[in-house]
Image 1 (tube, chains in turn blue, orange, purple, green):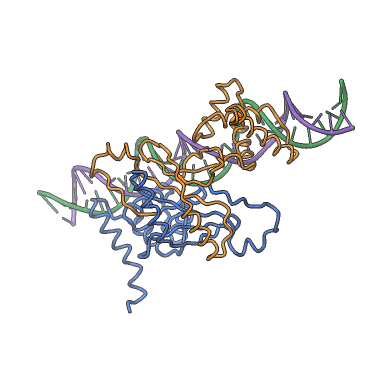
Image 2 (tube, rainbow over the protein chains, first blue to last red; image 1 turned 120 degrees about the horizontal axis):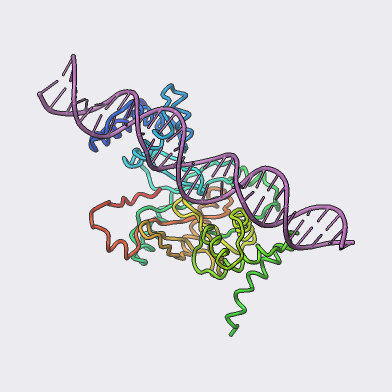
Length: 163
Length: 163
DNA sequence: TCGACTGTTGAGACGGCATCTCAAAAAGCC
DNA sequence: GGCTTTTTGAGATGCCGTCTCAACAGTCGA
């Protein structure tokens, strides 16, 4: 059984390898950002990364956060997800990979789900339309169990329309 | 066979009924905006609506366009779709309804597709997670047939990662 | 180890899209 | 027509993200 400690630095190692492979420089900001991202659980947005870095004593500018988040995405270590068209959130790419999201409109909670069947259907659909798929986003916006329970039953009936 | 003419005003009627039912006022701007939206085909963004109204001699402010597009969405006559996290586009809610989108990263073309199988899977997934679905967005970003053909074969390999 | 080269950073300006503000105008009701 | 309330327009504002450019700091060769 591998020690818990050995897990975290692995992504940093991968990132450094990615940087060197590209001829990019290994800077303090990049290491700190990578470490901070992988110290977080779940989904985190650029502002939260910015704040977390400042909190950890590694204040960097917003521009640097955005630039290096993009690098982490390019390195394949992090996914960028836009839920609801607003601010983007970032998440670790886990080994299991390939999941989609349900976001609660009320409390903002994000739940991940996996459906290999949907992936297969998408591949089929793209083939049928001669469309070369790069990336797919599947999001369900609605109410999580807790918020649905506390919502007034007939206040704002959520039409089941899919957009 | 119903005349072609009878089709378009139907949405305006529905919109006016929606407005009256809500105690909202029927204004020239609202009628013009509704008429302009349903005179367009396919997807149209707020700026295009704004320009179309100006072109038709019914200039209204951007704020009014946004406010009333939201009303059309609330009325269930129009869908608001965010593709790629950028500017939102609006489309008529057709009778067939319930479709998703493929957007070409190069030329911006939007192709709609329908997959009842995916709808059924989503319903199932939501039930499994006790999640009350309001709306789902499924988008595939990639290259349309024409753009894929003209793209350099191995220039920017599109990773098939799903985010 | 040192210096030079070149990529990276920070601060703030900037950009796109959307929303907010508030006085003036218009709709609806009597 | 007069009154009340909603809607509108113009522009400010906000949010999220990107760009600019001078100063800084990795990296590499000598």
